[in-house]
Amino acid sequence: MKEHYLLEKNIIFLNHGSFGACPKSVFKNYQNWQRLLENQPVQFFSHDVYKYLEESRTHLSNLITCDSDDIIFIPNPTTAINTVIRSLMVDKNYEVLTSNHEYGAMIRAWEWFSKNKGYTLTQKHLRIPFTTRDKFLDNLWEGITKKTKIIFISHITSPTAIIFPVEEICHRARNEGILTIIDGAHVPGHIQLDISALDPDIYIGACHKWLSAPKGSSFMYVKKDTQDMIDPLIISWGKEVDPSPSTFINENQYQGTRDFSPYLAVPTAINFQNDNNWNLVKARCKGLTKKTLISLQNVLKTDLLCPINDDWLAQMASIQIPVNDSTAIKNKLLNNYNIEIPIFKWDNKNMLRFSFNAYNDESDSIALIDAINKIFS
Image (cartoon, rainbow, N blue to C red; front, top):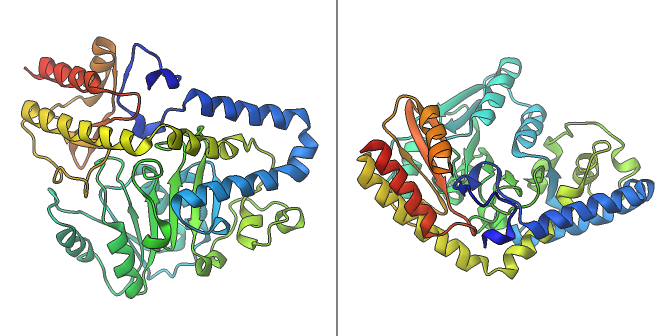
């Protein structure tokens, strides 16, 4: 499968989780959209782009199971969460509950706006190792107070690579009148996503990560009865030029001249996975993740963050690594062993996070385990 990707052949790429990796056929389609745009820019931007965006949204909505009029394309999850936080009319007495497993840029956005909006951000320190979903929920709900109006939490976490029980969180929050905002950056193309079943108020997902669409393609889902709360990040022409009957769509999807090609290539990315038996790919990669995690634990002698099963882990996992200088080890793995892999600080621990996707095989796992063994022996 590595022949289908543009990745350097001499690099063992174990960091799909950060930015994804675009297949050649998807990248070619992306460039074809750019050429079409340049062939007749006025026709493209004034008329055709709305039809193309609708087709792409429909294709994506079928994958993630929601109404196509409830999603907009957006460059990245960071832009999406900034759109959401800027829009929310929150009382100064409100509390926003999140966890210590969230992506740093998202937490920084919540903290930044709290200074002006006056809400309190509470990062609940979730006890590890996780054991059961019920205990997880009980631990999270210890952070709920009468002032909690919003829960912001990941579906799959970035630093710890753990699948959170989002469906249960959304259900319990809905019963208690708490708004749910889910960071699903790592979900589309990684694990099954059924937004209608989860029933969040807002769900943010990246298409350029595990779905392997071009960089700059993400989406934001907003439940119909929540859409009036969301203002466009950029005020543009809106319904004066956008033919969509949905105010949510026509105020948010076109916010000035930009390259829409990454959005329009999303259907090709979905088709690429459908054409390559992606359920088998995911199953193989999940098995490789579990096997590698067990081997690394035997080498590093550090505790696992959660049980090794499909409830908690998919194609990505993190493990604590006993080093003081994470940058030095990361560079050593790249320069001496040709392994591209992230090592970073989380919760005062240095973590190594590895990802497996279609272009990886067992030899990549063995190379990582051997390299870690040599470094720490």
